[in-house]
Amino acid sequence: MLTTVAYGLAIVLNLFIAFIGARFLLAPEAAAAGYGVPARFDQAGAYLTVKGLRDLGYGLVGLALLAFSGAQAEAWFMLVAGLLPLGDTLNVLRHGGSKATAFGIHFATAVVVLISAALLFAV
Image 1 (cartoon, helix red, strand yellow):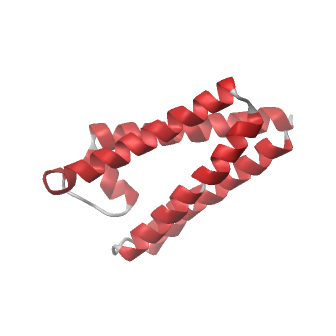
Image 2 (cartoon, rainbow, N blue to C red):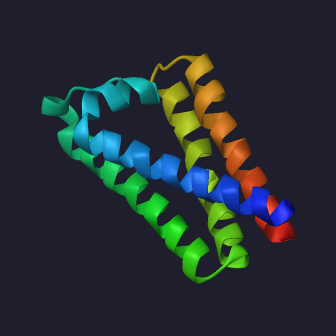
Image 3 (tube, rainbow, N blue to C red):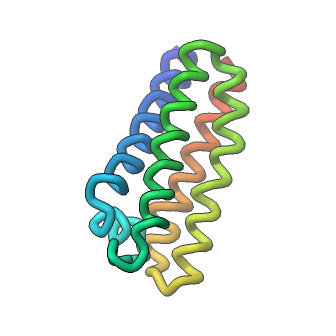
């Protein structure tokens, strides 16, 4: 049961981050607004694209680690990747985004990613 939950949560989180990356590539302004710091593509297109590529890449790397290296490698990846939404929390707060978005989305995501890491380490 623990293995199923650990792998299932890791798969969902990796697919979710890949989806967010794809959204930043396909609908960057809407994705930026959802992130908590709105940006216009004509002014910040390169940065929005970098965010999309980063998130898409992290999601795919996480899935590859889980598929080809197993739970321990994925656990270490999730532990390190959990730092990213913590940074996003600070970024949203620093640039005038709402506290609800910073903590309700980004900080909460960091907590779930770190829980995923703990579950994977326990498998």
